[in-house]
Length: 236
Image (cartoon, rainbow, N blue to C red; front, side, top):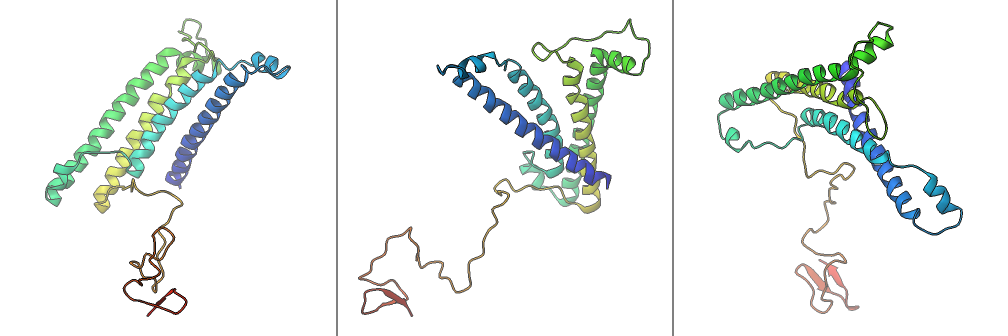
């Protein structure tokens, strides 16, 4: 139950960030060009709108999307890896190298999450935490803010410990599943969601070229066809 909710939350967060960033960039670009068109009333209104924060917000959103998207990639197996040598090994040795690689990934992301958490805490998160709970923290470092949005930077940098922690969890999750089943998550990079391969009917001649993409000679029938009196080919 928890794992299913975490999967949905992960996918929802990445989808919302991607969609919102794309929409903000589109609106910002349209505002920039339309503000240069000399349309009475509309131009003055557009110039009065401030979209100077759009670029900074999109950068923040893409950073968060990349960190949580990396964790999603570990879970679904979309990360690209060079495994030519490993696939040539025997099953026993191959399994050991796979487990070693997964645990190395978990160790690395765990270290990044730990160091990132310490950086975020010292960069102003502890000040915000103490103030939120009414704890005296006048001597604590409040931390800087972003130039345009003036958000505390510790909120932006929180993507590092949060995303890396989730990625570490995904590495451990994949490792445990591999030890139990011997299978890794696999993603078909050539597959497009929503486009399913249609199976042709049984009585269709795949080599007949009977479509509008190929030229047909009506005077000389193809193999397996006879010419009727009206000049059209009939299947035998």
